[in-house]
Length: 492
Image 1 (spheres, helix red, strand yellow):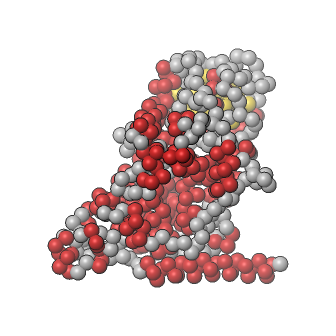
Image 2: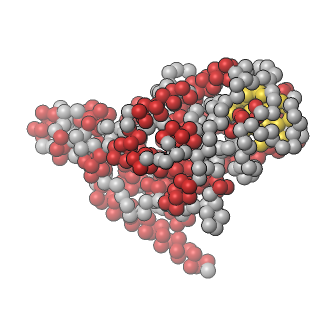
Image 3: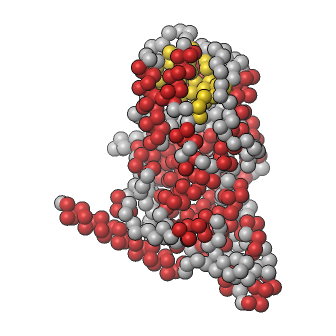
């Protein structure tokens, strides 16, 4: 089933072919807000609405989605959505079970003739929506998908060949030319039948790692703009200790904030200041990877490039554990991994370095790292996480060439020159002199004693030799290319 079944519905238009005043099920997914919400506006324009969220065991039970901090954040976002809906006259109905059974059942209870939802791009979302659509059709209930977690739908950026873009720069040029749509105001009031709800106890309780919901997201966005960070983004975004990033990724992931809202807030609907273009360009990467997964669902399970689907990985469990636990002996990598384990977030520069260490130094299949990030990150997004990992691994769309290998020491010296980020997350290194902070194994014994950091006791030596493993990684990729070319030649 296509990721979008038809043209987007204007904010206050009645969906064609449906009677004037029926009940509509608004099935919330990754769009947990009431403002600037095309699907909700379309549903509310028809009359009575039932607001539904389905706790899908196939998602909540999947290893990629057993992420306690993200689930706590999700619960808080759902609670905020329920409060916003209650202000307008209805409550969020929560049901547990297979959506193909739950959604039609709720529609029958409400005597609804239409279910409206926002699109998604993952292979599972496509299968789920196909099953839900078939079940609804059997009951003669319509199913319409309106909008999506992107700013520009995939069908609007098909490229010159009609198959989308595999390279970011031309995608960005086309994406930037699409006007930012005007705000869709939230419904003033909602009515609808009152249905029983299962509540949210299937999600973990507790304070999420960051404040959740549209109000918190708007506060973060306003601080990012008013504090000037958006204008310094191009210069500061890679500085690990200063952290000049927006911290909006989790809000965008859950849809408590829309990309269009961000665009309007920074002036992208007008004459965007040159200082804000680098940040706007980063938002385009989100759409780029969402469009890519929508068109190439196979990337969810493996490399886009066929020759790299059979790289000879070592997949050493001990090295994977050392990476996961932040004890590889490469301070910047370890700092990033510990930051993620503690907070559910990692600076993007640290993400790239950590990913490169796993793949190119430890020779572990990038899919193990992708899964670990999804189990930990509050902002864990299937398309963006997958795209980022394949970019670093050199296996995906517009990826870094396989021979580009991040040197974790040089990256640390460039983007954490004083070692402040490393010291924050790897306290064993707190008293290591600046000249050794990114290469603590180079300290002599006396310096180690004075710093209270004995290598091999308080902090590990590097688990591998970067120079040797870099050459080995490049050789493995070359070998995979050669074997693939040989197979194609033999089959010709």
